[in-house]
Length: 553
Image: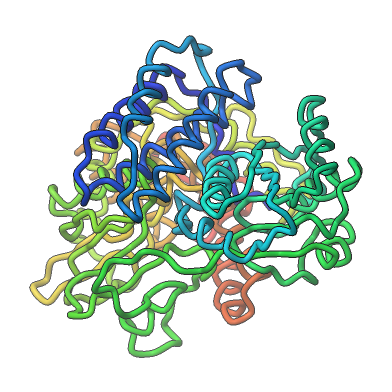
C-alpha cells in the first residue's frame, strides 16, 4: 500500500542560490556562538544545490561540490575554532553570478528533516573506518549522501588521508536498485582501486530493502574493487534477515559496515525520553487507552529536567525553518503552546498541565473549536497550488490492495483551498488544561513530511476531524456548516473524495506500521479495521453534508 509520498518538487534555481548566498554571508559574519548553526545551514543548502545540479547534469555542479567540501571542512574545523572564513568568502564571490538552469528538482534529505540525523555524527564515525592505506574514495548516495559524503571526506582529510569524492543515484525498483557509474566515475574508481584505496559508501538508512547501498557495492565489485576494500557507512545496523533486496543477507554479510553513532546534540536540559510512543505512559493512566503509534517514525521528543518544556525535533537548518514558522504562527494565535528554537533542529514547547481528549469529549463547543481551527489553518497555512494526482494514485493503489477491486477516482476531488494541512486531527492531539482551555499539539510538520498528503486542500483536515472524532451525521452537518459560515467555503462537494483518501492513507499507514512493530500490532490492527470501514465504496457526491453517504459514520 502507498504510505510514503514522493517529496520531489520543482523549484527555481535562483531561489536556491539566493538562499545559499544569504546563508554563506551569515556563516562568514557569524559570532562564535552562532558559527556552527550557520555553517550547518550553509552546508545543507550547498549539498542540496550540488545534488540537484548533479542530477540535472549541469556543468556548474563541480563548483558547488567544491563549496560543499569547503563547508564540511569548515564545520569540522569550527569544533576547534580554526575556521578560515576568507575561503568561504571567496566561494561566495565565485557562485554569486553562476548561470544555472531555470528550475531544478529537489527532494528533502529525510534524515536531516525528520530523523535527527546530524552530519557531525558521520564525521565521528570515520574514526572506525581504519582504511588500509592513506587513499580513500568516498561514494555518496544522492540525496542526503551528497552532504554526508562531503562530511566523511572532510573527516578523512582531517585524519591525513588523500580523498576523492563522487555521488550516485541508484535507480529502479525500491527493493532492487541498480547503480551505474558514468565513464568519468569509472576511470576514477579504477585508478583509485589501482592505488589500493579504501572505498566508503555513505548514506542514511538502510531502509526496508537495503538495495541502494548494496547496489553501489555491487557496481564497485563489477569494476574490480574487492569487497574487502568496501565499507558501508550508514545510520544503523539493520536486521539483515528482514531486508527485502534479493539475497540481501548474503550480500550484506560480505561487507564491512560502520554505523554512525545514534546520538545527537540535544538541548542541555533534555532529560526524559518521550519518543517512540513513550509519551503515552505520561499522559494516560491505563495502557489500554493508549492510541496506536508507529514508534520508528515518530519525531524525537524529550521532556526537560524541570518538566516545563517538551523538546521535539522539527528539522535541522533550512529543513526545520518552515515547521518552526508554522509552530510560531499557531502559538501566536493561541492555538498551541508557546515555542522557542532550542537549536540543533529541536523546538522547545511549553509543557501543559493537561490531558488528551477522547472522541467521547465531542460536544457543541468542540465542534465550534474544530471548525475555527480548520478556518485558521485555511487562512494562515496556505501554499502554492499542488497536484491532486498523487492522492488519487494513492487511493487507487490502496483500494486495490485492500479490496482487490480496481477503483478509478477519475476527476473526483478538487483543491479549492491549498494548505499545509495539520494532518493530525486525532483527539489525543488536543489537550484540555486545568483551566478548561483546549490546545492543539503536533501541528507543524506532519503534512509536510515524507508521508501523504503533502500540500493539499483544507478538506483533508475536515475529513480527518470527521473520521478521528467519530462524528455522526448531525455532528458532521453542524461542523461543516459552521466551517462554511466562518470561511465562506462550502467543502461538502469535495469531502467524499477526501474522506476516502484520508482513510485509505491511514489504513495503509497502520498496515505497514503493524508489519514493522510487534509491540504495537494489536492496537494498529484495530485502528486499521476502523479506517477500512471508512473506505467502503461508493461514497456518493453531493452538495449537502446531510446527504453524504458515508459508510458507518
